[in-house]
Image 1 (cartoon, one colour):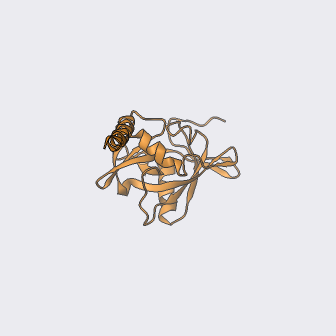
Image 2: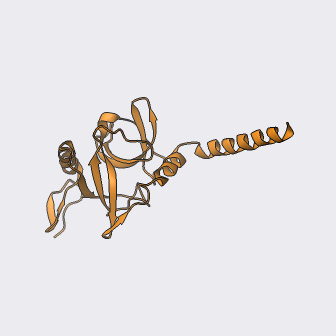
Image 3: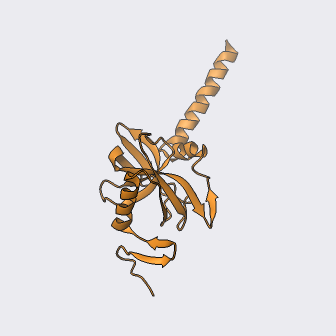
Length: 171
């Protein structure tokens, strides 16, 4: 039996899995997270590849009173479309976050307000194995390298370091 993919569907796929999409998935996630309970679901799409792939099981935990930091992967509702998205925080501007998919460098989700953040990704499972790459300390490197002009900033810092060392040698 085929299920329509053009609209949100609610159907059982196995004894332990319920398939939700679109607003249904988002609504259930919000209800679960507001009760302080983590929410697990199967990710769709490739915007976070290679760290989160299509079909991976991800666990979203409530943000609670601990604001997310640069490098963390968060679930949020996109302000313009109200769609559920899971992407990485690459910066902060005032009270808003700059969020971007690891595999979507050309289209950051600019200025996502704190109230649109639903939770943070705390675990990833792929083919029954836990994946931690992209959620550990390397998340900072991933986030900073995703920022526009990061390579130029690195080159300028290297040049400044060499210049300062050259000045010290000449003194």
